[in-house]
Image (cartoon, rainbow, N blue to C red; front, side):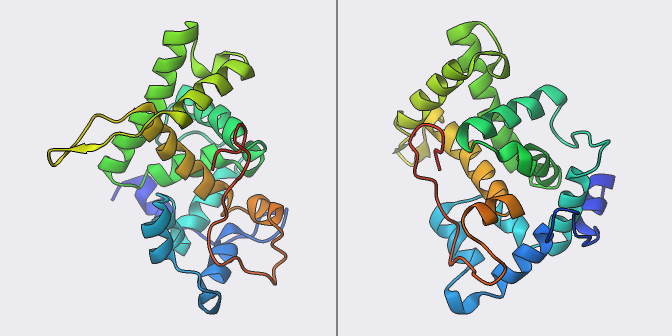
Length: 219
């Protein structure tokens, strides 16, 4: 077990200064069986890659605590990739940087499977390559309207189809869905995301909510 894995599985449960910890949010969600909340059912129905991590309270607590540190540095992504993810998060869910979505995802990826890591990097690279192809600049450096143009195109493209028992090469739509699911899962498991949707500490949602805006909120 490497240092990242050890830290992610043996973290504390300290509550951030701005309120209830993500660990406590997840604990209360998992206690909401009567409301029909199911991590297993949610993962199967919506395919959020973050869900399996949310079931591990210690990993959630450690990742949240690390993400809030003033001297935080990426554990899996490099700086450029992390900044690109932060920009993508803002375009998909404006305000997600306040929930430190890119940091939380980075820390979860650092203890995820090699398959999940490879898939995520491929999706992130696809947006970078598309931006370089269209505008000759990295995604995080082009204007917001051009970032949205790439996302709009990716979100309306057809996904890859299974052909002759083998999955075709992933399309931009597939990469968009992968990145979006990570961002949505990380954001709506945070205090900011839950409060945005009316969570008060008394009300428990029966499942992950979705976003409805077609351009900025693409969940």
